[in-house]
Image 1 (cartoon, rainbow, N blue to C red):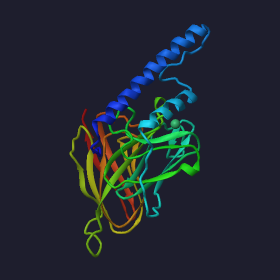
Image 2: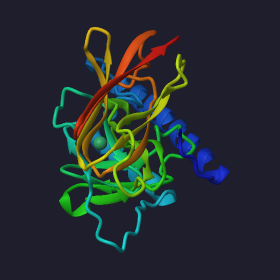
Image 3: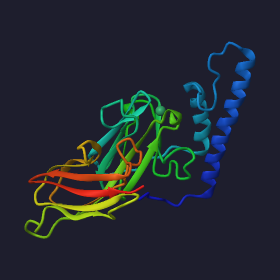
Image 4: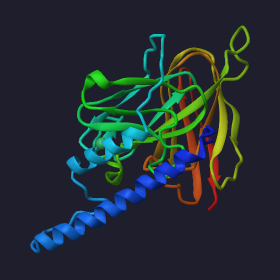
Length: 279
Ligand SMILES: [Cu+2]
């Protein structure tokens, strides 16, 4: 499911170098501080740098890794947004959830909004050889906000270079529309292809069809009716759509083995399909 772009090998080496530099820098700081102040409550380390220290490191990093974003000439209306809130990239307006996931369709745009000094860097983290391949933007205020259009299906990750150790990151799940149905309403609405593979060890794909446009929500729930995650919660046009559940809950952790229901609620349709997860 991961969208992979070819990337020069030099980039991953440079990233590995950055991480090594962080660790060495942290170790040196720790030595200096513990020597000069035996009362230091919590010695800094690579994972506990001050913002000023991280900002300095970021400035150095930017010399070899200039920030970049998509050049979009068309005005695109984003369907969802992530906004910096404390040490979070927040999507669901709930700061209690650490890592949020946006669910969009191919061709949809996401707006990244800055309220304080952070970065929006594509990738799973600084050790990801594809870190920054799609976008890598340092921002401070709304003037730095930017939009990225996701043109490929899959699961995309991004994070803040400065606050990676605080797990400041987000996920964008991009699904594929299969195109408009033939003239007239489809012969069947709701699930047109049950989840497969089933049983599964990793995740499952399924297809739905809608005869009319409307708000559509797809949840994964357990047999007690508890919501594990939400795959979609937005307006959809009439048509057929392919979705995938990656087998994880809203917290990003793999769902335990068991029976789950994928529940579809859309215009004129409420249906569930069972999927068995094996671990
Ligand atoms: Cu940050």
